[in-house]
Length: 296
Ligand code: GLU
Image 1 (spheres, rainbow, N blue to C red):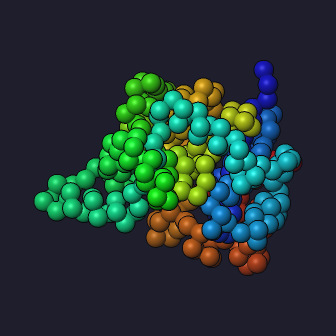
Image 2: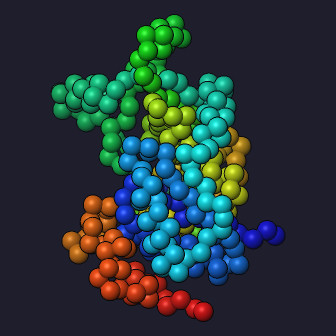
């Protein structure tokens, strides 16, 4: 049997905070306990918000925490060709369509549909599902809009896609799903509607890149925050459509602030850099996130 492969995959669009430290340390501890490898992936497809300084801070913070990772680091911005091939495969199978509606147009459409008091369906993150306007356009209209230079993203036709891959399971290792789910879980990708698989400015979105990378990097164990539990349904569907081997999932609990809110990159005082500057040690950080002291 080959050694398990774990990964930590931060986005360099803000400073790492205690929640990231927990995720990175947990991944690292689990990889070590399993005699596996630990990879670091920089998820920097968001070119507007990602910066070299945040990326460098990730390396510095993880090194300070005592984390070592395999090289080379995979930086998503350098692998657009891999995502383009996966996207082309989905387009070739007629599972994806160009989506021209702007966010504002979608908001207006949903507001109008809700004007009579009927709530528009929402995805698991509470965002209104995209209307079917773009899905229903004919080939000639799509060609005209493209020729007119109207920008477009790509969305998965969730009806066509789920018809190809019915009753998809995924494996949740620890009962760490939001409701304590364990073992074989039934994925529910339809809850996301026609999910975006490529943004207007690039041949991928978070969902497509994460699935392609986990497969190309032979990741066997995805250990990440519970906030991504429902996204796993989309990932399982994409894996199935692209013929990729699924990893095992472990969605860990989130570190909350004193008011019980999920930490975000806006809360500067829980940033690793700020905690280090305040005199904390890596052992203090392990204690704060509830991890056992490191075994040497
Ligand atoms: N890049 C994502 C984030 O920073 C994590 C992706 C994942 O672990 O699947 O939230």
